[in-house]
Every structure is written in structure tokens, then in C-alpha cells.
Image: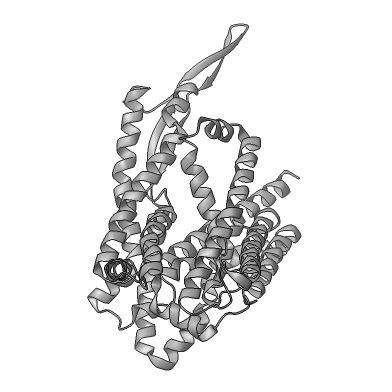
Length: 434
């Protein structure tokens, strides 16, 4: 890997891409430290220490949520908009037709995603600011009297910050190396590691060693599962294309395989499950201080159940991650329509008849290997709870990187290294041709 990085810096084009990526990350981190006005930093820190519901949003904002900066919403609304558009494609025939129109269709889908991300950013920004205002973190916020203009300014600022973060991510994708949005999230997660290492060195050196061991084992398992795949053999029949004199021109007859990934859903099931589990807690937080004692009691019970702590929450989280892993994997797999594509190209799986038999076989294999991926994602999502229950460390909340964050970090590193390797191979190949 070190040699690959050296080779990349020896090539002017790749060196420029890497430096652009690093520069954009620096710009994002600087913007993430520009605070929104009228925020009490002490109260904000106390809210994040007491409530783990905001942890996922903070992770997707690159750590900007914990300081409630202008980039507090990060790229989370865009990720939500992407998920919504993907879910709507099988439901709305027109969207499905656009998605199949090649590069032009993908560009139009991306445009719709940007349009949807704007109102989602505004709604998310207002909701988060309202929640923090109810906790005494932000002042001069509301829809009454003199607070309307400051409220509109705050929502517009948060929305602009989200769109700026999305634009920076797109710049990395186009001009830099790797997936821009993922790298921005990656940068936010990694930026906190030195601070946490310093805190553990001062307080608990044995805890730091335990965390490093847990991280090393978790990273190894993540790499194995992320790269794990089931290869389905495919045979293409021979076809007679033309006859030249007495010679037949025959094409085809090749053997290849279909790689079915163990974890084809990536981080999406964790986002689905966390978002749905977050919703009841956010709604209940508005009703905890209600005048009606009955409503206040029920809201307090719901808030305590869905506040990111407790055994019931993590059990529901684990089960929902498994369910959403199957749902999302099956949805994406059905959209690929592999049996029809194989039949159209003259390919077949040895021993399996084309058509419905092939579809049933592929669906069965995919659902069996998805079980491993689903359980893996469920364990990754609930790793802090498992560590706490087993008593491996005293304070799992002080882990260097959360298990979900590790999944993102490892995935981004693997994807970026693969793109870097592809760029190196392409340039060496061009040099070989010359």
C-alpha cells in the first residue's frame, strides 16, 4: 500500500487528484468549526453526552453537529434523499424508466435527488434546532414575534451548509480520488481519533489497549465480510456469426462468474434502522413537558425507550438492521434483473435452466448469504452494547471510533485504494502501449 501511494505521487495527474482531495477536506473541516449564532456550547456538550440519538447525525455531519456549526446537517439530508429516490423507483414507473436511460437517466435522477435534498435539509435543520432549543442549547429561535427572522436565517444557514458540503463531495468525486461524500464523512470520523486517544492516555491506558484490540478484531472481520462474495459460474454458449468460405466464425463459449456480495447493502440498513428508531424519540421529546400528565408520562416512557440506551433499544436495533438488510438487498437485486440479462446475452448457469429456474436459484443463494451479512451488520450496529454487557471495557461510549464509524472508515479506505490501484494500472497500461 505504501509503495502504491509513492507511485501515485510520482504521477503528476494522480498527485494533483490526491492534493485536491486533501485540500477540500481541509476546507470542510474549517467550515465545520464556524458556529451558528446564539448557541450555548456548554449546554450543547451536555446534551450530546446525555443523548446518543444524535450520534449518527453527528457522524454523518463529520462531527459538525456536536458543535452545531453551519455544516451541522452535513450530507445526511442528501443521503436520505438518495434513499427515498431509490425506494420510489420501483413504485413510480416513470422514475424506473429514467433510471434505465443510461448516463442521461442517472444525471436526471441525481438532479431530482438534489432538489429533494433542499427541503429535507431545511426540515432537518429546523427539527434539530427546535430540539436543541427545547434543551436550552439555542436561543432566539421559534415562529413567534421577533424570533421569526433569526429562525429563518438559522434554517437557511444550515441548508446552505448542507448544500456546500454536498458540493465539496461532488468536487472530490470529479476532481479528486474516491467517493466524495464518503470521504467527507470519513474525514469527520477520523478527526476525532487524536482527541479520544489523548483522553484515554490521560485517564485509562489499559482501556486504550483494550479499545485497540477490539478495533483490530472488528476491522479484520469487517474486511473479511466486506470483501466476501459467492461466485456463481456462468457459461456463454457458442454462436455462429458468419461464414467465410468454408470457415465458420464462432463467438462466445466463455466462462465467467457472477459475484454476489455477502454484504451488498453496505451502511444503508443501519441508516434505515437508526432513522426509524430515532423518530419516536424525537417526537416524544416535544411532549415530555406537556401539561397533560398522562401524555407527559407516555412521552417520557417512549423517550427513555428510544433514547439510544438500554437493552430494549439495542434489541430492536439489531432486529431492524437484519430486516432492512434483507429488504434493501432484495430491492436492489431485483432491479438488476440478472436472469433476464443472462438470457438476453446467451449466458446460463450450468445445471440450471434459464428463466424462472435461474431467478429462483439466484434469489435463494442471495438470501442465504445475506443472512451472514445481516447478522454481521446487526452485530456491528450493537457493538457498544455488546461490549458493555460483556464488561470488556468500563466506558464503551469512549471508544476511539464507533463500530458503525469503523464500517464506514474501512469501506471508504478499501474503495479509495481500489480506485487508486485502478488509476495506477490504467496509467501503467498506457505507458506499456507506448
